[in-house]
Every structure is written in C-alpha cells, then in structure tokens.
Amino acid sequence: MLQDAFPGWREAAPASVEAIVRCHDQAYVELVRAVDAPRWLDADTLVSESTFEAALLSAGATIDAVRSGGFALGRPPGHHALPERAMGFCIFGNAAVAARWAQAELGLRRVAILDWDVHHGNGTQEIFWSDETVLFVSLHQWPFYPGTGGPTDQTDTILNIPMSAGSGDEEYLHAFDHTVAPAVERFAPDLLIVSAGFDAHEADPLAGMRVTTDGFRELARRTSSIAPRVAAVLEGGYNLETLPSLVGAAVEGFDSAI
Image (cartoon, rainbow, N blue to C red; front, side):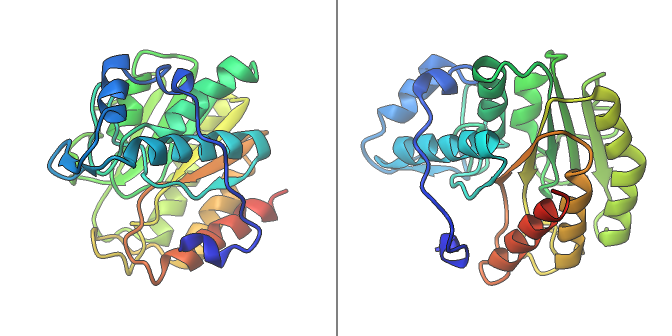
C-alpha cells in the first residue's frame, strides 16, 4: 500500500453524506450508495458494493487534511467527478467537498484549489463555475483527456493553464511563478487545497510530461508560500514504483515552507 511508505499515516473518518451533497446531487449519491454488485458508471469508472464507503473515506481524508494541514492519500480520486455523475475513476470531488466543508464548518470565506494533475479537473471546475468564493486553477496537458480546460475556458475565478506535451520542471515552475502565484495572491484565499496528481511525472505511463521528482518538490514548496493554510489530496499517479517517492517529495516541499 502507498501508506506503507509513510509510517506516521493515520486513518480518517468518512465524510458525511451532508458534506457530499454540498457538491453532488442527492440522486447521484444515492445511486452510488445503492450499488450492490460490480458495474461501470462510465467507460473508465468501475464501482462495487464497497465503493460508496471507500469514496466517503477518501473525501473524509481530504477534510481531515484541511483540518490538520496534511496530505490525504485518498482513493478513489475526485477531480473528474461531476455534480451528477462519476467520470474518469472519480466518484466524489474530494477537493471540492473539503472546500465546501471548510466554508461551512470552519467559517473560511475564500478557498483556492490548485490542480496540478496532468488531466484537467473538469469536475471541480463545473462544481465551482459560478462561485466567486472559490478560485480554481489548473495546470494540465492540453489537448488531452477530458478535452476541457482550453485557453478560452476561463472566468474571473476559473484559471486554466494549458501545458504542451513534453513540458517539464522549467515550464511548470515558470507557469507557477508568472500565472499561478499572482492569481492566488490576488484572490487572497483563507485556504489553498492542492489536487496533487503525479501523472505529469516523466515516468508516468498515461501522459506525455517531463516533471521530475525535484520539480514536484519545488512546486509544493512554492505553493506553501502563497496561502496561509495549505492542504493536499492525491489525484492521479499511475506508476506505482515512483508514486511513493513523488508523494514524499511533495510532502517535503510542503513541510519545508512551514
């Protein structure tokens, strides 16, 4: 298990259904709850009788990360989950659920979500498209799955930064310094949640980026300096041999700025 690489890990409590329905339609939540045998919810998303419990735990771990300033090792991931349906391995929008929880339960007014997964976080974007209290910023390979997040896909609080295939540390850190950091600082969030996907790594099999382990460490370090509270949740990352060291590097980067 990925957790074995982090001896200090602890299990989180599941999110409540009340927390989930702040972002997802009640009918969809009940559909996932009612699954009693393996089935496909979309072309990529297989569910079974344990999926509802696992998805609540994944969202709950993200809430706990927000509470403690930690890193949620959650599965299933969340950033493709739409308000009314699953998509791309994702059941519930973990970062989105935690952002809404922070506003409702901690009284935080403004939340930013930075998504550096190699795929665009279309679900997170849709949940917050018309919400000026949440800033969504996404660095992602484009054009690429799921086909959203192009250069014209923007609002005052939705910032998409399409990256060309083959981009590595230099391109990502340049985009962070010149576009991400200024946008987040202007927004002045009370909390920043990172949708931390590691499928932009040079050895990941599902994409075409060249970010290194040191690049992810540095992205995390710079991220920790642009908001008063920072938490992170695991999104993509499909090389199981490199994933523990990549998560570890990001954790080091987040911690180095404390």
